[in-house]
Image (tube, rainbow, N blue to C red):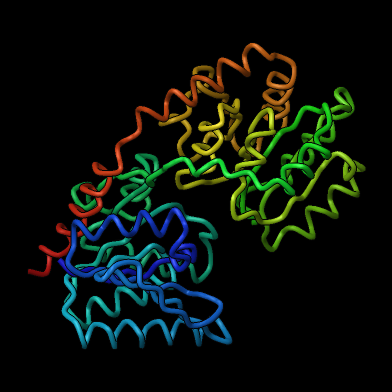
Length: 366
């Protein structure tokens, strides 16, 4: 089977990254695997003899999308492909559908979440998702959403969680020294996320303002970057908690932060799966998360973490106070979360599920 993919994960273009290593595993399952990824500039990365990733740049979003379309068409003309798979539900999905229709390819969509579901994005998703020959959803929660919101037949949908493998615990000495100096003897809540509205970091800041009055030896560490960073930093100043909130920016390897934090927070309004939850579990952190993504499927309230309703500041504050004050509970929840990692599907099993979904899409156009 030959597969062409429109993908959003730029880390694939770094041959040393963990995600690139995961993509290499497909060499045992397909003959040719080609990935096209929106990127800051044009770049070609050969992962194996049969797996190549192309980064495509563009001075504007529209120009970039046109160039992605042309690149995919050029590849499809030169080589036979069986399946077009898309890691997106909006613009790339629309382009992928056009290419799949033009070259009679099976059409698979990967649904990891539905962020920014409004305007043109909502219009495209509503038009394109039902046209997929197969859909791979990251969770049963997303499967139900696809069936109810988009009227996708159940037989088209395969549930396959995102693959997780703990990153090597390579702690850079200089960064680790800064982290230890910042932490001192304080209690640290950690969040690792893109700073975008759906992550609702504002909820954390508003809640943390109340908590730090009672427990001044507490810090909130925010690791990540994005369009909301300046706004969030300004909010922290206005709330007079900027001395207790640390914005660390984007980190290629956040392991040192997990290693030195005391609890992990996820406050998203919506989430496809939530890989950071699994990273936190690998470090035995007690997890407090909103009822999104893997909540109820991996994290079970009171068993291996705490789960609260989205957009509920009182519930989040109560959960933070519990984790801040109950060391025994923190330890037991953290250990239980780490133990739960052993119950996840193996890499080999997930690969088989992914390939099975491709085969389903391909057979629809056989």
